[in-house]
Image 1 (tube, one colour):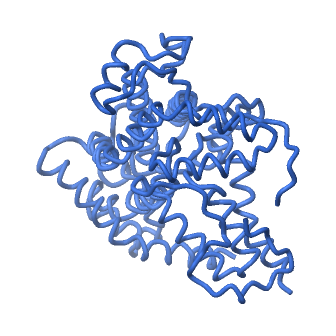
Image 2: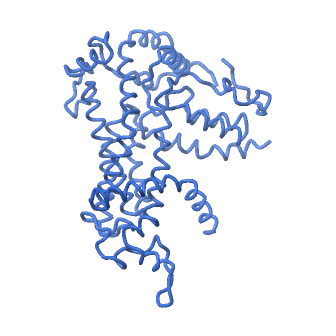
Image 3: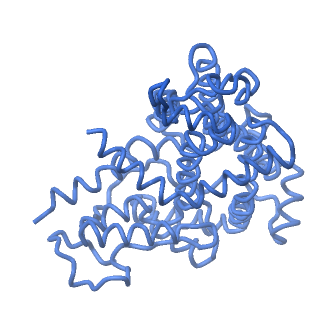
Length: 304
Length: 92
């Protein structure tokens, strides 16, 4: 029943239309006023989105640093509720709440990325296509006496204005890519996604690691039909995450050993400096992150 | 009544917990997590109220809040007597 899915798509599109308009304005600003190509404009838009989110990320990291000063009390709690994982979780969370620190990220920034992504999808598929490829693409999409109508999303810029939507090795940013271009984009996507989740991960659970590694490959089946520009966005945002995580972890001495970090988990010299500059009283305490408490433990207490 | 519909409504949440969540670092500063909270809210308060409670929790789970222990039973949006499920959770 394609008309049902089309109806749902229309609902999404109208809910997100303000966001689509904002993104479109930003892209047109980068293209027309700054004078860069559409591909670079998409990368610039990605960076704008991430820079807007940067204060949130830094706030998160500050909170994690403040936690280091409380690690003795956390150890006490871990010892006290050793046998009851759920109770330990609750007590830890109460403790964080009382001390106004929290080592975990929050859900909202993760959820907030979804409308951004969907808006980009709609924008590249239709409104921006007319900006990039020229008004002929809309005429071609509606159709005229000579040519039968084709959907705007399946109209290739090449047919209207060759080269207008080209970026690096991608012939058309507004259409799904094919052949080796698609393969190269997918490889870049999987590689950047794996790198960013490896750098973010704190888990030691084997199953979690397997899912973490498998997920980008599953995503490949969904994103291979997306407009190439959307993949440019995704790859850029992944590399941004990698870079951001690298710098923040290096500043706090939490780099994993395979990236030249200190295997003892002790903060390196720059981290100690950063800790004293930011938190004040924190000396060189072991920086082993509290998520260690989330490792699987025997579950003996029965609570539902 | 409607338990199976409620269960179906929280299927996407369960799928997220099972297949997506393990692949990313912990993204929730609350206990129970937002997804567990939403699933439990739907089970106890029905789909519409449950979704409202879950959405309100997601909005609170932002970098400016402090997180912490926040069970469904502590919610203040709806009256407790709306709880129609028979599995009464321990109110801690």
